[in-house]
Amino acid sequence: MSEKLTLNILDDDTQYAGLLVDVASSEGWNAVAYHDPVEFLKDDVPKNGILVLDLIMPEMDGIEVIRTLAEQKCKLSLILISGFDSRVLHSAQQLAEAHNIKVHSTLTKPLSIGEFVSVLENIEADPNFDRKIVLQEKPISVHELEQAIRENQFVPHYQPLIDLKTNRVHALELLIRWQHPERGLIFPDLFIPLAEQSKLINPITNIVIRFALKQAAKLKEIGLNAPISINISSENIESLNFPEQLSSLLDEFKVPPENISLEITEGSVLGELTSSLDVLNRLRMKGFILSIDDFGTGHASLSQLYQAPFAVLKIDKSFVMRMLNDNEAMVIVKICIMLGGMLGMKVVAEGVENQETLDELKKLGCDIAQGYLISRPKPEDEFLSWYKNYTQV
Image (tube, rainbow, N blue to C red; front, side, top):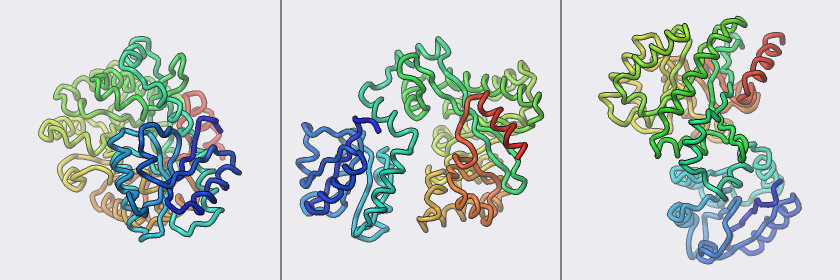
C-alpha cells in the first residue's frame, strides 16, 4: 500500500477510536484518530486518504461534517459508522455521494473487528483508489487535455456484456483511457468532467466513435457479431446534425448502424429536452441501438423512458453492487428489471463482481450482465485473447 494513504478516524469516543487506530495500524495503514470534528475540519489538519466518520457526535454530527467537507471541496473518501437506524446510514451515504464524496462502506455499531478489517482489505484491492489519491496532488489541466487530443494519447479498452440465458457475449462496451506520458494510465472519471467543463468533450467523443468503428470491422473478421457500446455526451444529443455526422462516419468505415449502441446517461437527456428527443428519435430511426445508462441515479427517469426511444436499460452499478446486502438496493434492481421487461427493453446489470450477484440476477430475470466477475476492461489484444479463451470454455 502507498505510504501516502492515511486513515483518519473521527469519533468522539476516544476508546473506540483508539481501538480502530490499533486495528488499522496492524493492517499496515497510517491511522490517526480525531475526537473533535471542529478541530478536524480546520485547514491545518492534513486530509488525504480516507475518513472513518461516526455520524453521532455531540458538538457537530456526521451530516454536518459531510456538508462542510463538500463546501471545502475536500477529496477525502468515507467509511460511515453509526449505532443509529440503518436507514440514516443509508441516507447519509446518498448525501455524501450527491456531493461527489466516495463512500467505501457503511458499518453499524457495534461493529466486529473482522468486518472493519474486511472493509480495509477491499479498499486496498480497489484498482482505482491509489491513483485517485496521487492525482489529487496535481490536478489535470486543460492544457494537458488539449495536448492529449492533439497528440492522440487516448487508448480504447473493451469490457464484454454477457447474455445471461446463453452465456454468450452480447455486446462490448468501449471505455476510453488516457495514456499520459508522465502520469501513466488515467481513467475517464478523472478527465471526462474536465472535458465537459472546458468544452473538449466533442473531440474526445469523436475519438471514441472512430475507435468503435475500427473495432467493429475487426470483430466481424473473428466472427464476433456483437454491437459495440459507446458513451455519448449531452452536447451530442443536443446537436441536431449529430445523426447525419454519425451516419456519414459509418458509411466511411462500412459499419451497419445496428453494430453501434449509444449509451446516454439520464442527466444528459435533461438538457434541452426538445432537441434531445429530436436527435434520439432520428438516431433510432437510422438503426442505432439506444441505451439509457446509470438508470436510477438521475432525475425524471420514468418520464425519459416514456418519451425517448430507448431499447436498453442499464441498472446503475451502485445498486447492483449492494443488492445482496442492502434491501433498498435489491428493491430498486427488481423494479428496474420488471420495468424494463414490461416496456420491451433489454435490461443490463452493471457492476457484477461476484457469482452470488450473478446467480441472483439470473433468478430475477435480468437479461445481460457486465462487471469484473466476467472481465475487467481490457486493451484490444488482451480482450481478443480473453474472448478466445471464453469461447473455448
